[in-house]
Length: 143
Ligand code: DQA
Image (cartoon, rainbow, N blue to C red; front, side, top):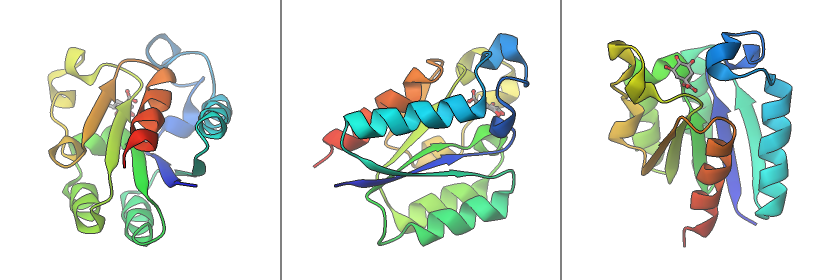
């Protein structure tokens, strides 16, 4: 069974409370339950990780080397700022999908650039929870 690490970055733990007009009314527990149900359907072994700390995310990506077959990451605000997360992804060189609940290309100018996109093999934006499903489907079908 393929092992996939699903990483959610800062403030995603506040889903439901956080700008519901943008991010929806469902909370983070609902997102995690949705991801686990998609994983079961796709016969993937998923580990969930959320952190508000850049270094903790870097540590988790580094620890994924030799353990996981792929990474699905919503780096949240670190998308637009973190060379460290980009470098960690490049270092472990696992197949990686970048996912965003919202369409970052249609929001503020500062959200248009993504460091993670410089490495990720696929980016999915603006599809809400379904984007996580699409990302897992992509990782599941890789050889
Ligand atoms: C986000 C988009 C980011 O710009 C923002 O900082 C987030 C969430 C999204 O899922 O749409 O925290 O990654």
